[in-house]
Image (cartoon, rainbow, N blue to C red; front, side, top):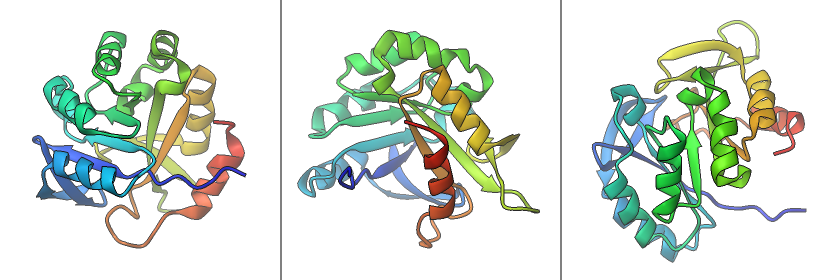
Length: 198
């Protein structure tokens, strides 16, 4: 049995650390570098940093900030936000980041998953799936662009697809639970875990 791993996820907007509720109303909560130092001291197993506006605004990843985060981080670091090409993924890895996360582009251009996986290794490719429960029924659709665009695709189907394309890990986000202090959607996580082998 694998031991539990604690992997905090930090959200970045305008270079600052923010907290959201259902992917809306981002509130500034501090400097991301300070947060990395705190999680170093707490001995977190891994850290995920997501720039929540990069894709929506069409921005490139902030390589300077990424390099500063990587230099400070004493655990494996995963970065996501604005990654649209193999070259960007390669550059992020070269800055000392272990994993690259993609979300919207993974749905728009699924072949990019395979291309990045071939370039930097499957173990370094993370696909982030943001989900919301349908109004009727218990199934969950995948949403993109900070939860503003519904792909109308079932999360379990998408998860199987990204696994086949070369994703090494999946991050599952519940838009419904985000920031509400209600805990994880364990039922959905269990279903997803039973569906994929990554």
